[in-house]
Amino acid sequence: MSLVTKALVLREKNAIPAVEDFFLPPMRNNQVTVKIHAAALNHRDVWIQQGLYAKIQYPAIVGSDGCGYVSDVAEGVSESLIGQRVIIHPSLMWGDDIKAQSNNFQVLGMPTYGTFAHHCIVDADRVYAAPSYLSDAECAALPLAGLTAWRALMTQGKAQSHHKVLITGIGGGVALCAAQFALALGAEVWVTSGSQDKITMAQHLGAKGGILYSEPDFGKSLMKSMGGFDIIVDGTGGETFNHALEAIKPGGTIVIYGATAGTPSNVNIHRIFWKQVHIIGSTMGNDNDFAEMLAFVSQHRIKPIIAKTFLLEQGAEAFRYLQSGAQTGKVVLLMENM
Image: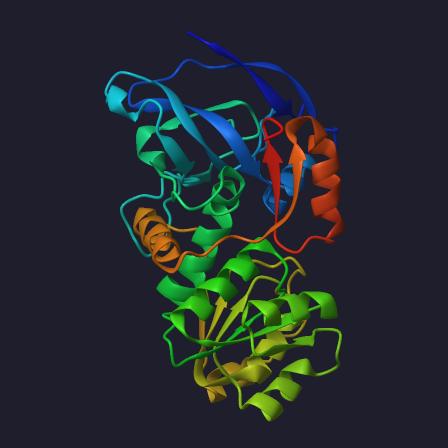
């Protein structure tokens, strides 16, 4: 039987998302319905709203991050799950190869219906027990950013406590999670940003320091002052990549999980081979990554940084706020005023 739910719906490219009653398809076998209490925005949601994403289907309910309570289960799922508070794993159909996702890989929220609704239907193996010490909003802020940061820093970067780590573009959800994970690990953390306030905030979290990426030749400056980095975790791309090649130690690792600044115009290929740099790509993460991330977060009592919360009915305002780049941390939608 179809379920009618309140949802923040996109009807066309560049449309203003609006709350409406929406018919979700019936659950299939081995699925559950989660009554969402909180959901978090990612830049992916804004790109979909702007039509800057592959294979967009309308109408769309975006949202990859969510926390709530299992309200119903389909055949093949134990009814003991009903009433449990859960966090949703947003990677779908990763596949059997732990090294990289399959061709069928998807992220919850496109083309599937996502978490910006009072209810979300997912396969039962996508729900995990929510860390008890985190609020619903904090749980919702964790999945996509935490998973992406964990795989980049730990699975691909193989970070260790004695490493010196540079995280670019601090202020975004993934970068902040990566900084928190590296600090909990015991690594020395440095950051870059376009805002001195965001660098200062990172220092309050425990980072040793940072540098504005608007500073000319900041990579050379960091190499000269710091002696370089064992690991650089970069989600910006663009000219930052050549600065990273300057700042990385010989034999160091640069992990790239995004390219918000685009493609660099002229990569210094000589730096790569002469310094014997390891360059590794990273996207989201598999089930092992997600479980390990949750265990690490719980062990170290890490709390995601939340920039601002909005009610679901304020979804359009939340989209504009994230697009502005003013936030430091995650932007979270609450289904009710809790």
